[in-house]
Every structure is written in C-alpha cells, then in structure tokens.
Length: 354
Ligand SMILES: CC(C)(COP(=O)(O)OP(=O)(O)OC[C@H]1O[C@@H](n2cnc3c(N)ncnc32)[C@H](O)[C@@H]1OP(=O)(O)O)[C@@H](O)C(=O)NCCC(=O)NCCS
Image 1 (spheres, rainbow, N blue to C red):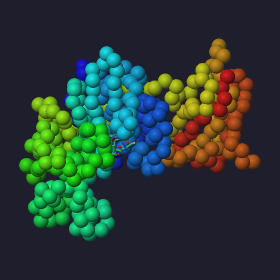
Image 2: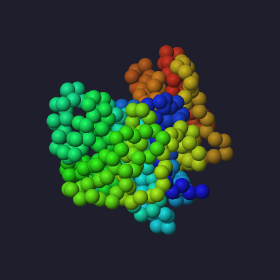
Image 3: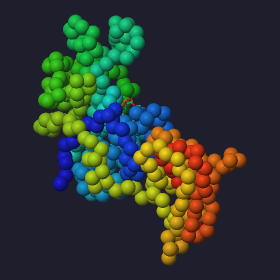
Image 4: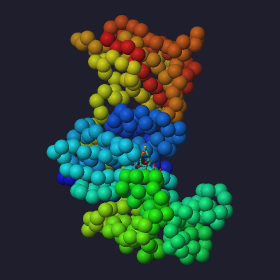
C-alpha cells in the first residue's frame, strides 16, 4: 500500500540508541550519506541528520513501492535532496531538524514542498530588543506588527520563530535556501495561535507585495516546537505530524550491500562490525574462525574499543603498534590477552582479506 501524504516527526533528543541500533541505522543509508554524517562533531547533529536520511528512504520506499536498498537519493546544486526515477511516481519531500525534532513532509504528485521545524526559544544572548533591531531587515513592517502586537517577550519570541519557520519552509520549497532577501517574503497571520491537534492553513504569503497562491500547514509538534509545511498548491488534506519511534524504521529496511557487514568476499579497508557487550567489561580474548569448505577467510584484522557509541581507540600492543592479528586459514585469533581494556563495544576492522 502506498502513502501519498506524509508528515512525520521524531524526537531525537529522547532517542538514546544502543550501539546495535546505531550500527543498524548506519547500515540502511547510502555510503556518501554516512561520510557526511561522520563529519559532524556533536552526537545530537548525527542523530538529527541520520533520522532525516531514514525518513527520506522510508517515505520513498513506501510511496513508490521501490525496493528499499535500490533507492538512490541525489542532491541538487543547492544541496536539496531529491529522488527521481523513470517508471516511479514523482515524489516530493523535505526534511528539517532543530531543537529536539527531525521532521519530514512528503507528497506524491506535481507540487513544490518545503518543511521547517523550530524550537520556540531565544538563545541570542543579547536583550531581545537589540536582537530584533539586528533582524529588522528580514521581516516586513506588517510582520513586525504581528510580533509587537504581543506584549510579553515570551509571546513575541513565539511569533518571531513562527514567522521565521514559515519563511524557511517557503525558501526550502523553492529550493533556494536563505540566499534570497527574506524581507521580500512576508506572511499575513490570520490566526494568532497554533496548537498540537489541528493544522492551521489560513496564513497568507506575499512576495514583493504580491499575494501568492501557496498553502502553509502550521501546527505545534509539542509545546516547544512549531512546524510549517509550504505547499505550492492545496492538497485538500489536513494531516497532522505523526511521531515515530525507531522500531518503525526497522520495518522492511534492507541494509545497503557492502556496508557495515563483514564479508571476506570483498577485500577492502571499510568493513567492520561492532559488538555491543551491553555493559563495560574487560575483554581478555577474541577468536574468529574461517568458514570450513570455503575459500573465504579473514587473514588480518584490527580491534578497536570504546565506552560510548562514537569514539573508538585502536587496541595497541605493548610496543605501541596497532595490533594486527594474522593467522592461518581457519583461525584468526585476536591476542588481547591483557585484562586491562575496559570496553563496551569492540569494532573489528578488516585490513586485508583473501
Ligand atoms: C536549506 C537551508 C535553508 C537549511 O536551513 P536549516 O534551517 O539550517 O536546516 P533545516 O534543518 O531546516 O534543513 C536541513 C535539511 O534541508 C535539506 N536541504 C539542504 N539544502 C536544501 C535546500 N537548498 N533547499 C531545501 N532543502 C534543503 C537537507 O535535507 C537538510 O538536511 P541535512 O543537512 O541533514 O542533509 C540552508 O542550509 C540554506 O540556506 N541553504 C542554501 C545554501 C545555498 O543555496 N548554497 C548555495 C550552494 S552553491
């Protein structure tokens, strides 16, 4: 069964993946996406962006019927991900992550679409008035009226974030990002408040003074986050954002071939697998065995270890060399007989296979 209109949200701040979950999540996305994710410094950014990847793949697979592992997502020259393939229905989707949430909006059909999620907070440091002065050119006079119409700062921040969210959803739909003059894009707010249970669709868009026939679906995902979906035409549906859990991504997902698995068939430097020991413990010995009746067996490997799910240190011999275990055909034994290496996860990295 295909899903034509999707609105998904995932609270990544509450997601504490085990090593196995993280390894699984990485195994079901494209390799270039993995490389991109590895460049993030903070774990929360990895989680936020990774979930975006998982949502895109899941949406494409559900809405086109395409096999999960065959889906290739490309990016246009401004970085917007898209999927286009002959004999597949045309799908439009966009992802956003901020605060605690990653969201995806997706549609099948011919339309432009962008989404943005924003935490309703001010973290600028300076007094709010100073900040508003700095931002003045990005908002029209009528938008500033809508912000200042509220008397207390908390509500002014809410309206500021809501308008910013609307602007971002629009620039993301047209694909230009924040390279345009945001002050030329002005929203007329007709309903002052948003809520978690209904979609608000009565906000109007004016670009350089001209009213455009776009639709903006707005709602709160929780008390602290607003979301806006910009659509170039009305879909005549009111779909509220559904909060997902990680189990949902596991359904019908197939790991991408050659990644995060250990196969002696391929001889390269990229293969590894992670063993989650469940708790920190001392590992005193590691054994691997080749398959009998097969010409594929491991000749060398490295071991690394760690106690969180991101940083691994190479296990080194007493002389300081990274340990490489070499053995014969049916046995590849990791020495590791010292008992002073507390670890929670071990990674086996294959250096050379025959
Ligand atoms: C797109 C943009 C508005 C995103 O802003 P943001 O609020 O920081 O990020 P969001 O969380 O809302 O969205 C990020 C997601 O939008 C998508 N995205 C990336 N570029 C996009 C674009 N040009 N248009 C629409 N969506 C885009 C991606 O899925 C991205 O997720 P990822 O970074 O995990 O891959 C901002 O990065 C921007 O202005 N980019 C344009 C830059 C540009 O045009 N550069 C010229 C390149 S030569």
